[in-house]
Length: 280
Image (cartoon, rainbow, N blue to C red; front, top):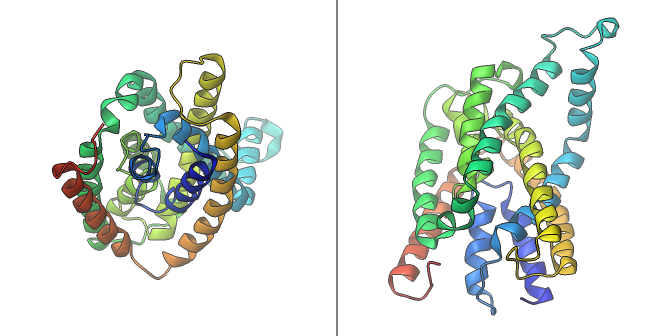
């Protein structure tokens, strides 16, 4: 694949990682549409996500460093930090919420690289989870704050995050949908979803980067330079998207993204049914 295609995919990764529309689905689809007509692969996708997750670190730097600092210091009796401190609780919530996707990612490696990347599956989950997001966003009580997250809810968020291993589900979409279903306001649901993704995405990205270096047979159509540039581009675009989204959801719903998912999934089904796109 060309250098220009890598940049295009980097832009696409940055644009879609934090919106509930699935960045992995968009990279998978774009790979078939671009001139080379090649799946960028799970390795390229995971590595470029390091760029967008670095944007999360920058945007939430104050929150992240405070949470990490208090979590470590609360083990010291002289710190004066209570075990039920909000930041200490958030540290534990992120840890327990990360466990499900670590286990699923470890045991489902073959499926993640194979069956999960079928465009038929991508199209179906785009539509199904778009409908679920729409229902969760519109119905019921929605006034819980970030400090209201319980350990039970953290585990449920973590289980929802494992669904992001399927291209088309969307990490932010699945976790935000769970948050809305549990009664959290949009900014709280989104912020915890972003924080929860940090260890999982960095773990996955660095694991894939290590594999691409130590195992030359790992299938990726891009060179290290092309992947690196795409990752940097994804960081810049992703940072702008986070800033936009956190302002947008203060007053507006996720319905435009729901409609977009339904349209994209339907168009993809038509293209697959007519043979325009190859599902594999």
